[in-house]
Image (cartoon, rainbow, N blue to C red):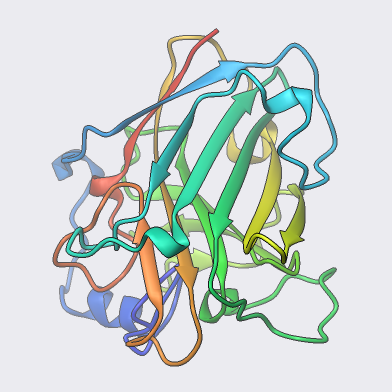
Length: 250
């Protein structure tokens, strides 16, 4: 997604375009260096399951998770919107589960969750940025889901302008649940490996990835923007050199 969208936010917007315009030429992938060493291990699942938003089912019992409550710049902590991410893989899919505390929910009320929702990042959302070919630093994929199960997926290529393509469609499946009593919402994503140019996945593979959360009411200066791997000094989530390591294991 993006961000300061008005500074503007998220996978795409004004600010991001502003960042692109600051340089007459985009640095080539060969000149990029990853600067984050945060690490997440993704175990293999022997079975595939359809997403239903229920993270208590047996499918997720042995999955590792990462948890974060720091803002995207690493300056503040917000335990009231603490967020966990789990992941598993099979021969056909990679799965992600997000679990998040919330104060209140900020969604596009009354809209059909079926169609892709442009500018979803202007409401509460969880986001997975995935780069299965880390040698292509500036090319990756973005997946967003909101508490009401609205969604968007984007192919990102920062060597182009605009750098995000909403016309790309991964066919990923997703489902959410809201536990209003405990102020927790969850989502599951099931992403076809073939849609992100992965023909076969094997233990030992290392992708680059980042996870984000946008939460809260009001304008961007009042909302909370969290990141697993922080992006100090940036005004957009789209800092691929700050992606952490997502390691595929058995």
